[in-house]
Length: 182
Image 1 (cartoon, one colour):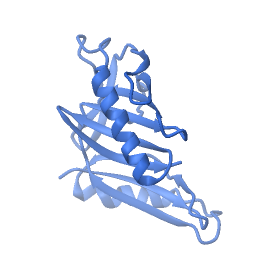
Image 2 (cartoon, rainbow, N blue to C red):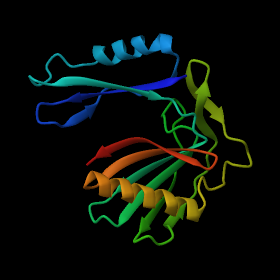
Image 3 (cartoon, rainbow, N blue to C red):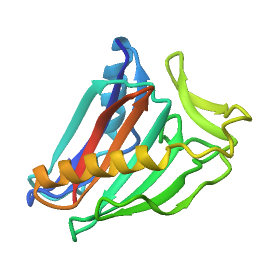
């Protein structure tokens, strides 16, 4: 089963700072190398009492990814959506955007041209061309965007405040990959 590995430097006060990239679609035999790479990025001058925290999770080869940012007002969610994985590689990422307020249909839905996406490849990920029929098409329908926003607000309510979330979409399935309280 392929995995993703990501790391954080957690200070004595509990604040977390991302540590390097997320390594996606790794085989079990390469996880140790990814952990060593992240550990090697720890600054020798980190505050006393800091910890390097590494997480490994099942890799989900997304057809699309949704980045959700819930605002402190607890009613508003900003969404960014792309085909494939939201892993920035050399060609950059191409996001559609919208805002959902008070459980209403998305506002200001902006669809961007998406010529490339990040996809799973043997032993990692890489940039692929988006099929021409999908390049100018919205990643999510307004109803699906509203559904993701509602899920983000549910998670933010459980966390007790605003947060950044990452959802993977594969067919009708939505998987929460990451949740960072703000």
